[in-house]
Length: 439
Image (tube, helix red, strand yellow):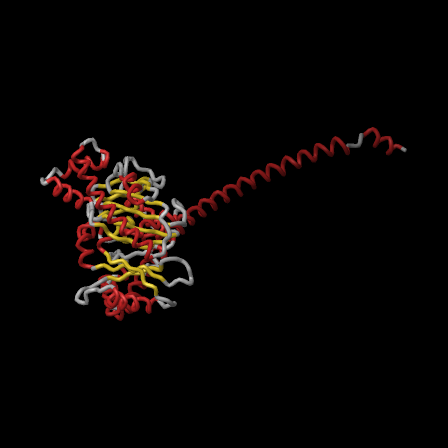
């Protein structure tokens, strides 16, 4: 079942790394640009995404028939997988499941079963370099993002056929939901081997794929074209059988669109070939989602991984994550981290009693030193202020003496001025005095 809660460190990603482990092809999404990188480099800021090829899984649909809790579902699918799908009881399996659609009245689940040892064999090198895979998606579920991002409408039935070096698979969706998938016996490497068997000799592998990618089924090399068309004739006979079965088993009236794609480039002429054999309107599986990239063609599964990874951050419960390669827990949650923390706490407790006495003693001594330092500083300032006060007192005494001298001068001047004033204003003439006296 898909995780509904994701690691918070994923949501704080700076780069998204998409990984094709089968051909060791890696892309990095940074600053709105999607670029191919030569090598994986560990960085805990990377959000790493990969996929598990269709042929590595047993995929089935099971109708539970009624509502069960998560714990009950796990046991139910475990029992049913062994009973109905013929699993080997001697082997270990990883069983993942997801409800087919959002219909509350539907209890149909898609079940994905894989063998951990086989899966690990493809991801050993990747894990050595990247250390973790945040999101691992079953290849057929990658096409779900086309509907979630409204590239295609959530109606009608669509068929996807994709060729990779190690696997080729047919996937059918109905009303935007995954219905069925089946691997073909014609991966690109198998096509190459069958071509060599047809002509009775080993041709250069690089040259073969260069012609296939550049000229496809419309090559000017008649011998090449004839043999290749024989092989693809077999391929589409097998695809036709798969489509007929799926339509009958899942009550699909008709398939409205067929999308064909390949890991290195669209195969020229394949769309016409598909329409002639299956009678379904056929298109190249070639979307770029308006993501900046300088290459003329990018493996579509790389784009689909990127978009599915962004969907997973928004709604974790709607994207099935079957990764068994999580990030290392944060330090406090690791066993080693918990041991170190416990050791430190225990050590502190062990020396706690001596510290109880030592700390106050050292604190008092430090306080006394601080007081002594403060006393010296204050004594120095006190001496400075006393000296300033003595100087001010001397200035005041000098000013008082000067003021007394000025007061004496002022009083002398005032007496003189008063005498002059009295003589001028209040003086009685003698003639007037004699006149009064003679009467």
